[in-house]
Length: 79
Image (tube, rainbow, N blue to C red):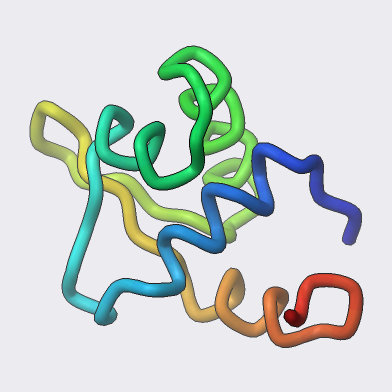
């Protein structure tokens, strides 16, 4: 699966969290160094792919899924 640079930035921020921790779009934007709109688009694409999961309450809080963690361990995304 190929990810865009903003998507990788969002997943990289989310993977640093404990499995029970979450971040809002604004918090993710700060961690990923992107504007809110670009972060929101990246998160929505990641959620559609099953790599991120949003809460049902507002503001939506996001976390990485086990599938997202697994993807970041693969060669092109590992640091």
